[in-house]
Image (cartoon, rainbow, N blue to C red; front, side, top):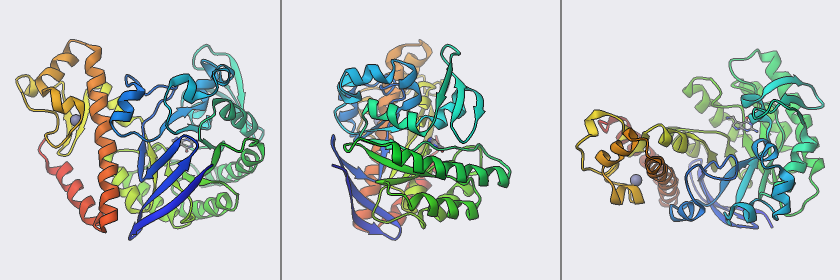
Length: 369
Ligand code: PRF
Ligand code: ZN
């Protein structure tokens, strides 16, 4: 039901194919974030058109609303939201730590209050897996503890030990053979702890492995160094997922170090804040500079937005507070991310990944936008 096939490699960069019950995923891939079961402002048809192959949902949000039992009654998330390609759910811990009012974290689990109505809730590995099985995504994530940085080494050491015990419990709680389960490596930016966590987590029989705990306040070079170090301790024959990362630059670096999967709210969230990613760098569509511009957002982009609309019109939609502006911006940014990983896959297949990456980074930093 679930398998990963490593295809081409180019130094440490790799292409592969993940097979799931809802279809295949070509890696490296970017996963648009659909927190509550919808990628904000974008329909499944539009996701399909822009080349999305897998989207992400969140255990925490779907458990709170509409409730994972409701999703289960509809036959799972794919039937509920009509996205019939693969889905991955995050385990909820990270969202609890970042969104909810935390009450207590112990080995048993996490006590917290709902960010919607303040009600008292509890999540632990067993509950997280039960909820994720109700949601029915193709890939589930182990319940982990993500420490925000900077943090004391002794705290990070305790958190990787807890994350290991929770990973064992997550694996043991899985009763469903159709869904894959990925383990999550933690350890902050301490390479010693990263190595230990990688050895612990990869000793468990997971279908794939993730790097968690990065892009949580550390400097970018340290994030790259930690990613590069950690992938060396991850099996070559299983998918590798860098959680919650990141910018186009971050994706290109992650791919260079052998990462296969990424997710981030950045393309969709920034789109709604009028910030567009282009091959020549960031473009702020609200700027007066674009008032009379009849240029597309990115002349190299083939998305619906760039094929049909000018910067001047998109600026007008933003100024007027029109919903269409949010949609057109989101379509462009997601298309940009998905075409970036597609071009990366092609470059790896041609054995020219480093050259592709350096040229792409150079253009994004000196494009004059
Ligand atoms: N753990 C989980 N989800 C996550 C993270 C993590 O560490 C991150 C960190 N960037 C994003 N999403 N479970
Ligand atoms: Zn575009």
